[in-house]
Image (cartoon, rainbow, N blue to C red):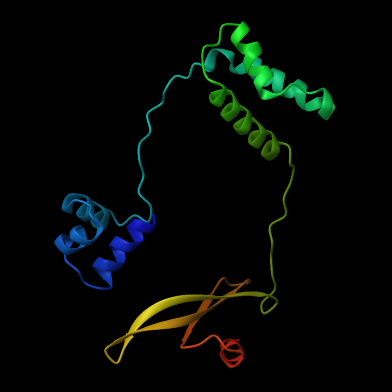
Length: 176
């Protein structure tokens, strides 16, 4: 995603050609042209569905993980022990695949059992977020480093951006 932002910046802000963009990034001209014409923010890659060696044992492992989660910490079987038990049942896959399955299972359990959430809402003028960032600009023919103040209003989600040469208290107060 960072590379896509660089490509877009070179093409749109710096007005560089596709050929020059390609030379600087090391990507082919076709790839540069595809990213610029698509207008997407983040490239999408198609990942084909693959059958895992763990699929026939997934229900068994899920049941084991559920029973282990209910036991006291000292009495739980480790993932290495669960992998060894699966191998006794005929599983030929690696320990890493079992560990990845267990991580995904834990994340799924944490998000499904959490209940209700209350969205944040703010009255006008009640709250805002403030942060600094750095960027460069050409001022008077010279490349100058700028300190950029970002203010994001919580109610309307409107934003304000101001650029300064320094990050001093005076600039902070002026930005606010």
